[in-house]
Length: 349
Image: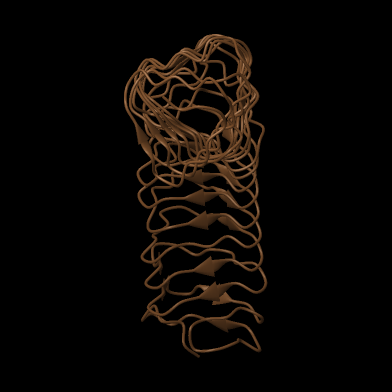
């Protein structure tokens, strides 16, 4: 039985069923081990811990301090504003109305959000979370496992989606910068999705026909772009090793190929393209200026035309009779005049 307004130090632990008839001053880490009755307008401390099934009713409370931990089945009674680092991961909670969550909130699997919430930066959502309405998203939301989005969402910068997320039944907005999509993500089949700069596809995905990709897009190793699909790439795209392009493609400026790729037919590579080691070309290509070819590139089957400022790493093999113009840069130095390659494939004058 506490009388009046008491002051408690850090890490005090209270038993189940405690009632506070007045406002208290709690130190950091206060641990309320059972459903507790608090005075209206109570201010809770940093690292406060609440038991399962805590019921806050409809009274006003202050949850602005950081890093509180809430047990499963908490009933918040009305819309609340939470500080940073809130941990709701012990189990599903009952959120009423439009709550406002600070940065780095963590939620339990299968949490349901029925109202329009505002999430700060870096929230973490476990598998099976259900979003019944449009939300306001901060940066870097992390969706671990597959989620259910029942209405269209406009996601924030740096959102991260896990493997096998299905977006096929909604038109979401992925325009924000630097979003990440895991393997086997499913998009709408009409290719209508538009992605923000820096979209990162970390696993292989079956993209729809007519898909348009943004600048700085990154693709996983072994990504397949089938011959029957039309896709559009932008500048600074990056492709993982072992990608297959299915048919003739046009690659924009400063594309980066990591490792060897499978190209089909005569492709167009614009200025500043970078190829990995041991790439081979079975057909004539169109290379832009300032292209870089990695070590042991193989041009031995036929002649190619190279743009000004193109650089070749060590071990490059050229076709017999290939001409290299002045201004190209083989591994041994800058060519000050044009040469014709001898039969040994080295093309050293």
